Length: 375
Image (cartoon, rainbow, N blue to C red):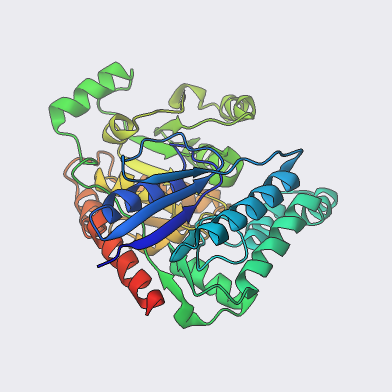
């Protein structure tokens, strides 16, 4: 049987990015099937198997719009020349067979972000040339006759696409991200104690973790305000050019000694294992992988109503869901979590919820979709 020639399009691969982790996990799982795997990218920094075919597509650029438009044009020319059986794009490029809406709906993100801004900045944001280009490219892609299917990682995003672009429900497939629950596991008592000692965290303290770069979008200010006034610690794993502002906020609220900024971590597992819960009141996020990783490590999750990951949260059982700006509700949820996650009912329920989200299940769903499209 002739293998399916599949091309996956992603402009730039960052090892710490959620979309990139989806791609790498999917590719590793799909590698076992009768597929000829191709990646079209401007820059790929991650490891790959010898039989994956890498197509570097790096046209000149002079700004953000030029970067997006140039890559879209060059990638489309490449896949048309190569005549792949299926083109699955993780970028908003008209003419692909499948689009994975890993970044959600751009206009929805702008609307939610604008709520944080004064009126004059709100108008500038919504009329920004780059954002107008992205919204136009997104609409053009959804209206293109070549588009056969859309992959979403949350029901939330599926409904947004139906409402905004009129795409038929049966063409949108919700395929949740995968997690390796053999890699992401809760720590035993001895490991946890050693980690706490190494990280200079009190052994009996209740510690929450926040994981994500882009602090405004991921809701770090609300997380800090929620922890302030409690005795909880917060580990901030990630980076942002405005980090000084968030450190200043913690100092202003009198909790700087309990808010630990630890930067980007190549290996997040020890940080999850040292914590008692994940606090991620993100402003808008289709389904961050960090929720799956934390739950696999036995951490109850507090997230927001504008996060697709909330679909995995059963309030009071394995976490809580609050408004992204509702600091009072977030603080109440923080205090409602078990003080120590280890072996708690919520910790066990959190891990149980993600055990079925395996790479094998992800690959089976993708292969089924590819076969359906080819038929």
